[in-house]
Length: 172
Length: 196
Image 1 (cartoon, chains in turn red, blue):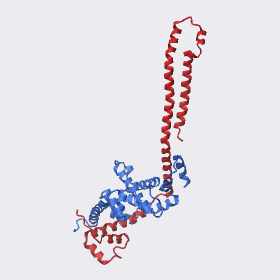
Image 2 (image 1 turned 90 degrees about the vertical axis):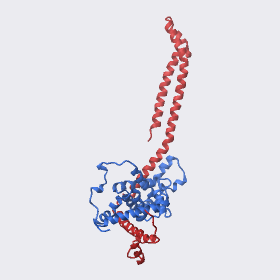
Image 3 (image 1 turned 135 degrees about the vertical axis):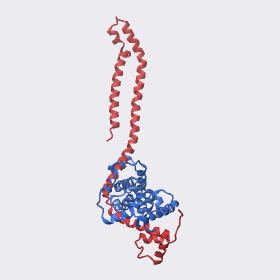
């Protein structure tokens, strides 16, 4: 298809769009449109679109602007929440790591003492004549008290961790 | 600033003055006036480009919501009216393209309501009878170009802004589309077996 431009195209288009074609248009332009293929196409198509535009616009039943406004507000708020949730997720990860590191450190520290605790346990099993006073006399260095401390600390950490995770994940 | 937007602004911790000038911060009355002027032409564009009234309803609402939420939307003052309208049509065009890229559903529930209803008046029916079948034979992009040029009266540069096509190619694409549509319309007007 060869592209053919016509110098009258712009003028005819303006006349059609303003509703002045054909009655209020110059006769020479009407004569030209009758013989020029490009302008004839333009008149045919542009007139059809102008009629279709007026009937289609008349058929439009847009909802109220308030409903659109409200939807936009809701989405705007949602986007705002999403923006603040991003650093919140980072804070959750940080809180989890901050909780995990002391636990691992504590378990590692207790694992080292666990050797002494195992040694003590083997001594207990080997010595049937061990007095109860011997156990209590060992005081703070007694591995049994360390075991109790480990259990209490683990329970406390689990409780605090659970509460921290709950508050961190609660969004609204 | 309207109170409605104070909450997200405070939550986001944004004190950016530039955002005060975006469409999201225009007052309700300015938006209502803009909506009153632009909603019907936008719906007409969408329904003619998509040939689906229910889809046009959805896309029109989505276009306005995105327009209001867009950070770079032109302001709705008197100087920005034309730019805002072009921006709105650009959003609608992109939504149409997104819709056409998605796989089509063949369910009867998703067919347009107009296929089953008969509540249109005579003038509408005549206009649809004239242009509707012809437009359905055109490519979606051709329908868009023709409507923007001959119904909305946009220049080639404005059509390029709306469609994202190169401004230099609009002229040729429009010429081809117009010639094709004119041929189809002449075929419709001629009686079957009529003399050429």
